[in-house]
Length: 355
Ligand code: HEC
Ligand code: HEC
Image 1: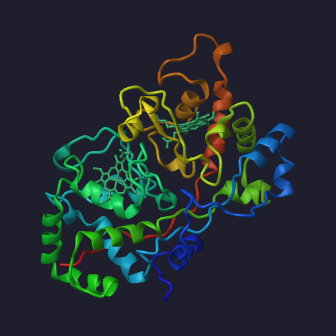
Image 2: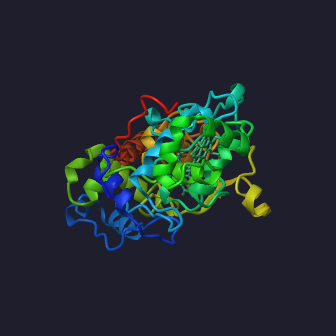
Image 3: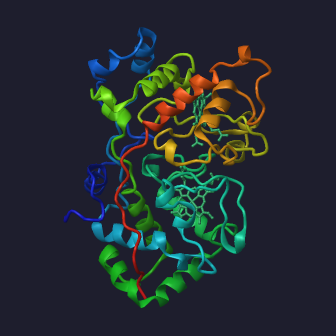
């Protein structure tokens, strides 16, 4: 298979070449060892917490056997991802809410779909979503293929129905050769649209971050403040109870500090899951604000403050003694989190679409 030039850095290429299906909800990088040089920069308790947190660089993107990757399919998926003609009134594409310019997420608290309708939740980044087996804030979708047709039909997002979307794309003569190249047949089906978009998303993955470089031994990849923040993240902040593993999440659900959304309970119908949300990845978190499922917190520092100290946003502590992390420590932790911004894939926004 040719190496595509639309994806330039290593992880993206790996994604295209990978064919292994992994059953875990995120792919673990087996056998990764944290360098002695990195460990030497931390206190004994932090070293111990780091060893237990099983942090590691990201492994290869899993690819389901039913939808193997090919350059042709990824190229079709790229066009569809950015094409507003998938929406009912041709004003909204996937990229409207998951914009490469804002970390493949949305810079607004919650998303605006067709006819300026405001949705209830913040759009997470699609970066690295190829690794997840529980998609959405409440984990209600399992695969990218299953997920992709959701927003197209969601009345508040792209507001279309599948037969109309298929009819609209079938009228675009220029798409026929792309479908033929990707699937062997020119016919447009909603399943193929979903498969092509999912294949494309499997190339929207982040490359190594300064934190990964640090773990591998380039200790100067983190500033002194970031190392202090890492130390606090591991020890006093106890963040790795929930944020650990290669993605800095256990993949479990935990209580939000923000009321008003049933969260995971909408999926499980279990009262114990009320207002619990998927513990989000912290990779690329410096790029994907605003924060939390409702996007109500604008700055990363404030998000760390809320999670560290357990208050509702805006509700400060009565006294400094109540704080688990002081404002200064919160700034250190936020600085550390910014070292989790990975190298972004170089994916071009299509200059023109098939006609
Ligand atoms: C109007 C805005 C909007 C549009 C358009 C939109 N999305 Fe989303 N997307 C969201 C929101 C909001 C969520 C989170 C919803 C939730 O958790 O309930 C989401 C979630 C996702 C997720 C899950 C990410 C994760 O971390 O779990 C993926 C993947 C995704 N969208 C891909 C797409 C694709 C592909 C398209 C185009 C076919 C698309 N989206 C169109 C707003 C949008
Ligand atoms: C009990 C599990 C748990 C612990 C411990 C925890 N978090 Fe989280 N974290 C969550 C959950 C759940 C959310 C999502 C909440 C929501 O959206 O309402 C979250 C969200 C976040 C976000 C926002 C991410 C985004 O994309 O919106 C940041 C930043 C964050 N946590 C950092 C931290 C830091 C730093 C610590 C340690 C001080 C910490 N967390 C401790 C469970 C936890």
